[in-house]
Image 1 (tube, rainbow, N blue to C red):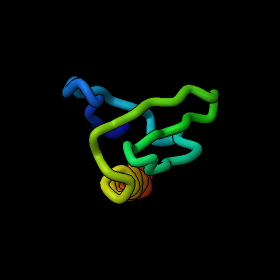
Image 2: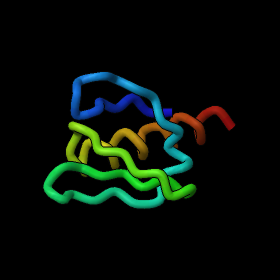
Image 3: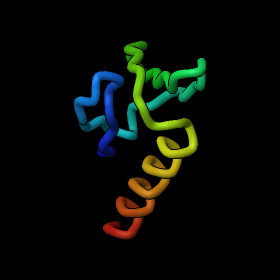
Image 4: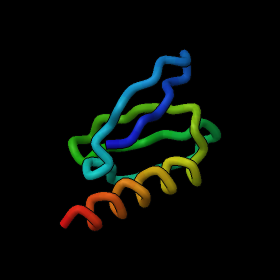
Length: 62
């Protein structure tokens, strides 16, 4: 799970395993595997870094 920020400033948690695509349009749009889209304040690189760090944590636990 990674913490992100909606455009209105509200923070929320998303399951990084469900992220299908991340686009800059110019706002960052995340598309989940179920087709749901969300716009976040973080840029693409920040979202990718958070997702990669999450995966590293999960790998270390195994």
